[in-house]
Amino acid sequence: RSSDLLLAAELSPTGTSAMLRVIQVGVKEFKAGLATEQRVTQEVPQLPLADTTTTHFGAGWQLAEFDRLVPGTGRDSVPVMIWASGDGSYTIFRKIGNAWTSPPGEATRLWEITGDTVPYRLTPANGAVLGFRTDGQPAWSQDLAGNKTVFGYQGNHLISLTDPTGIHYAFLYNVSGKSGLVSDVQMIAGSTTQPIAKLTYDASSRLTSIIIMRSSTAGDTTSFAYAPASA
Image (cartoon, rainbow, N blue to C red; front, side, top):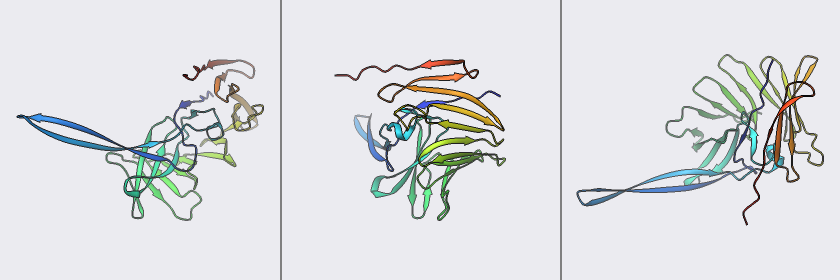
């Protein structure tokens, strides 16, 4: 069985809420010597680059499968919930009364179940259901056939993913002096443990390499380098 570790570079939230900026674009049209102007208003979430204790993979990196819900406030002080995907894309839901409304053209719906330990549910058009904890972290995802993938945590640390077949992917935090960074990913099937990936970081806690393991001792390395900050 082969397994892939997919990381995506993104802007991630550092805290428990997000700031929304309102961008207005004006377009002027000239007809018969007369000018008419139209304005388009768009809300854009400002999600600051996460620190390493939030992403666990170095600043700016996240598991592509790791979606989150981030609360915020939109125009006219309306509560919003930002569905921030691990690949860096986002969708903004607005709360009107007691219901969350999707943006125009978005088929996914957001539901809130008061009193449940997994109170937020996203239901895309493909029949899947994504469950989120009270802090917006993903709890599980389920496809149309009921196959469920479960996220496991120790405190705020993601420590495992368990797929519908019961195979367990463990995230280990063994970086010397940096307790919030993932060092290894292992696949556990029954009594068999197989290394999947190793990650390394520089002194600034930036991801420098991902080694996809082909055996317990050999792997293929992808390295990353960072340009110095401009003066």
